[in-house]
Length: 348
Figure 1: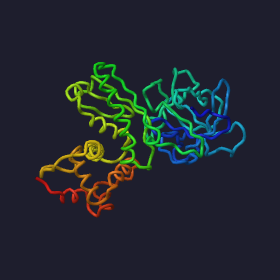
Figure 2: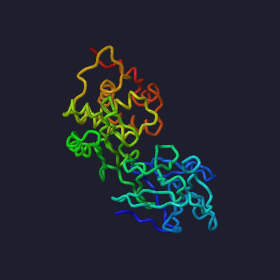
Figure 3: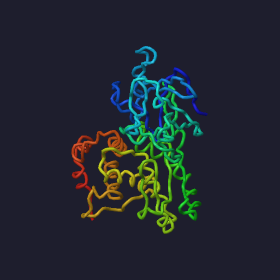
């Protein structure tokens, strides 16, 4: 059941991709960016709901709640010239009024009352990026929001599951195959969260898989969508592992880890947990920066011989921006650079 907005109450707003509505650096100056950010429980992520006309709401930042007289709130404002949100003093216009539309299963879509640009919905685009106002897209998890009363604990996907939307419209002959993968992915989602996140940050709670004829590779993850090449599936109907790999990318939300480790973590989950077996050996010509199975082999070596939790630590560092490079980061945790760790592995 949806939590119902109530006048004068404090809520945190969290999207289905795991990002909350956040005031950048807790700055209360007019024009401050309102962004998507990982949940942290701060006042910058708390919003007071004030009932306005025609069922709309003014959202005041918790940073200024109780510090001013009536009509002088610092509110969530739609900067329509830029198409994004920012903080601004209360002025009563439509771009500070928000409608909450029930999207089912405890979710809302949040629409600006200002209609000059057509229907525009609050959208979490990415961590540290200003919230956008975009046309309605029922498949975008960034347009689905839940209200969390301040003091409640956001649930991780492991406790509630992930919502996976399937789109086989471009390859209807594969609809049954795609549907058969869904329970496998749902089972492995919380397992993967435990492996590469733990409780460090909130994973997205929804994403979609699209069979896309324009995709000439295998598959890729972008935002809250996994694009799959239907021809690859027709040639390899027994391969579910590539979807596990892409699901890892949905969970990662990487910001700073280099690409070889981003892909290596995804194949480490696939090869050493889902499939229980990676490369039998590496060659003298291989490098730990080769990504995919080769980098997964490297990660499994370090996890086996140095720190069983190293892959989770690496993934979290890539997400929160603390990854300090292939020399400094690895040396601080193992006493050796990534290259030194690779050099000690026997090769053929």
